[in-house]
Length: 335
Ligand SMILES: Nc1ncnc2c1ncn2[C@@H]1O[C@H](COP(=O)(O)OP(=O)(O)OP(=O)(O)O)[C@@H](O)[C@H]1O
Image (tube, rainbow, N blue to C red; front, side, top):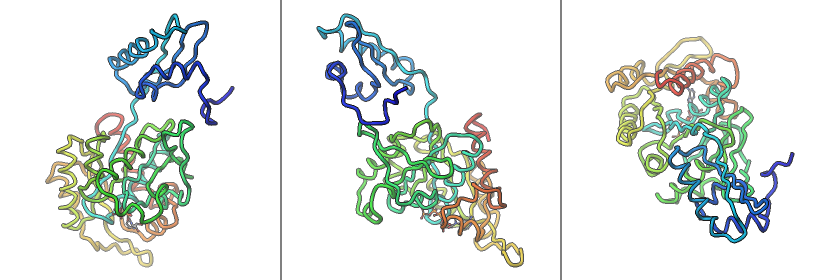
């Protein structure tokens, strides 16, 4: 069987005729357009549309093609109802608290549970997902229509796209608000194949990327990350407020770097304090999702592009436990 999207294809005369009668917005959805015995047969993608909008799309195609002299009848087939792809934002108030590490490892753990997961590196100014998911130096291809990027397959069963795959290191630093918004849209609207869950690794703080995310690609929920330091917690609360104002449910707060286990003697010390995040979450009435300890192995694994959650070591456990809770939230709305 031929695979229609393997190679770029020129539309034939019939398809070109049909497409010329349709608006760009509709053409974007049309997957095939043929005329068979004066009957136009159009297949359009509508899996993301609610029933009323599906009917409108069908009527709009029929109305646009009816005046064509070459056609007596129009048949429209809309692709089946597909569950909408869900977006979960992973945010923090402060940089360097391990938001990217958490995003990567949650995605890998969810993929190992059989979920179809992708990671969007929304950290346009300091992308780290290419390294964490071992896809550094890989350039994404475009769809045959040339209108979308194709997400990259990482070696861990997770698809990924990052500005770091597109722009030379350091180049995006001078970008301003509207450009960052466009860049994020390019990543979200890419061809993610069968992926039905996207984790978005947001840059720290409450800047342009967060705002364009809330306005154009409202996430289904947000996971917040903090270290136990007071300052990080205060910033996390600020990031949380932004999601609340945007009516994005906060799924919960994760404490990262929560106690250091010395690889030599096994002694656990708390360089950033202990238990603060859980108490803080309780005070703000935000669910506490779990604690990820500070370990040398987690840091080294990150640098090597070998997420601990891809293995079976001790370092994988906290990520797996949080991923299980996230999966439950996605399935039932409860943790
Ligand atoms: N639990 C952990 N144990 C040890 N090292 C960790 C842990 N979590 C994160 N790190 C390390 O801390 C550094 C910062 O982590 P990461 O890049 O994930 O943070 P971030 O919040 O995404 O930072 P940025 O603000 O730069 O995006 C990395 O070197 C990472 O390997």
